[in-house]
Image (tube, rainbow, N blue to C red; front, top):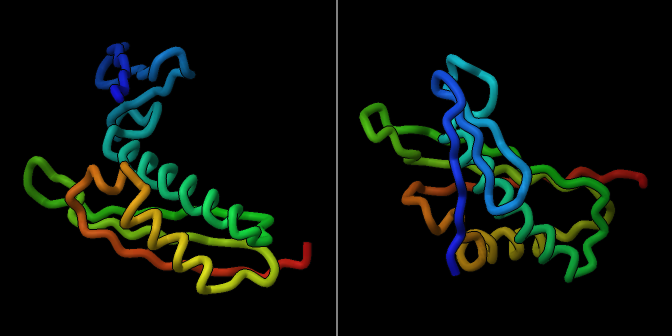
Length: 136
């Protein structure tokens, strides 16, 4: 299976990226600030990939969620290529009667089996989660 993306330079260090016929995404340097940097997009990709996994697994287990969020932070090496050396992923789950065991298993399956974005990086991953009981 091949994934294709086209990246077009616009000005300065700003680029517009498009995967297939999908919507365009603007990338920029931190100085230009018109969009996330490529390395911030790497974190966004990891967050999106693991979020889809965890949410799918919890839905199959019929977990009663009414909100879900992923917070992600990456530590980068000080020298080039300045890769991510450590990434922390926090999963925040909102709902009622959420079982810790189900959350831990969903995260484990995502990180060790399903999340291709995580598997593509050579960073050390850590995770944590919070379950917030809500009345809805």
